[in-house]
Image (tube, rainbow over all chains, first blue to last red; front, side, top):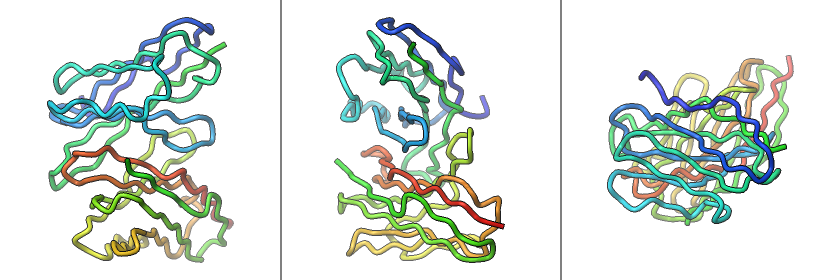
Amino acid sequence: GAGVSQSPSNKVTEKGKDVELRCDPISGHTALYWYRQRLGQGLEFLIYFQGNSAPDKSGLPSDRFSAERTGESVSTLTIQRTQQEDSAVYLCASSSPGHENTEAFFGQGTRLTVV
Amino acid sequence: GENVEQHPSTLSVQEGDSAVIKCTYSDSASNYFPWYKQELGKRPQLIIDIRSNVGEKKDQRIAVTLNKTAKHFSLHITETQPEDSAVYFCAASLFSGNTPLVFGKGTRLSVIA
């Protein structure tokens, strides 16, 4: 595709349920990032995938959060037993580090609301 | 890991004036410093970036300066226009991609016509 695609765009879930968020990065981008953005707040780093390296999970806020990436393509972020404080926009980005154009491109985000 | 501090959190300027946003980083190994602009309800988009082999980079009304010794970098916007109103984020990482992009908390810039 032409850009980073995320699905769903919006998700409303009940407290305690599990949710899966999907990110389709730009083809050929080896790096993929997940960030959380609460309303009016900054970009909170969650997890980073780069090529065949072990993912950097240092930003995951609790063991309810996990993410996977299949090769250098799709990634899913899973939140188990959702809590109201998980409500936020989850943004995915991809890039091609080390290249002249190393810009990280963001998807449109998934707005998660936990009720 | 990397920690990026950004100041100020909010900034109001008159149209035509200059705006300066400052960031500091903690990891002396970081060598790639992009700036992103996020308009209301939209995704962040890159406006300018700088690598540590240069001290300054300009693109029309936007410039970024880097002081590696002090571990700080700044965004300068001259002749501000209402359409510059947005939230601006600085970030730091390794250009090689061995570390993730870590962002500052953002600066909400308001340009008053």
